[in-house]
Image (tube, rainbow, N blue to C red):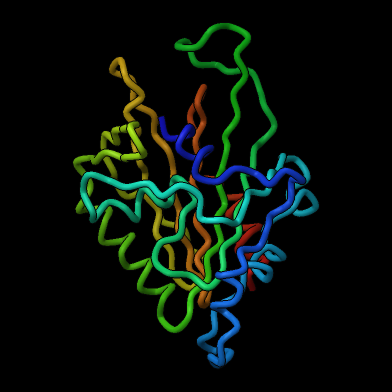
Length: 233
């Protein structure tokens, strides 16, 4: 299922810190003007939410390398899959990411064993672009939502992860522009799981959020989103 893809797509560094990607940092050090120059990985790492920003959450920085590339059976759906596995949508100048987890609590669903805990895990990915790259990347996500409404399949090596459907979610007023959508994962045995994705553009930077709760119902991670976007101002 998709969390397995997430784990292989971007594993934490051994020392628990985010390691800047030299190629991405170099790409951003061109002579582009301040209005069009994308941020470097190092600059984005400094802007990621931290435990100080979200004291009631656990935060795990993730490696900034591209990781193992995933694919989809429908090319137009790849931007949506990338929001789930913390991969860049389009060519970026820098990338930083972390997993943010709320405090566990007792699961209340009758479908899980008594004593099971639940918590929502939210992936946070910051990517920056030169010129109109951020606007263009967000446009591909917006276009993919209706195009992939009937579902698609995520492909990773010999593993396939079916997506049952995609639909718009409650829109948030944040950043310069944003889009929110629900990706329903096919968990097998007739069980579907709704996950929440939000992509926000602030200037030349995209902040991508994907929230999932394996033993409960995930909600839009509004506190995480508000806190992260505030740091991008």
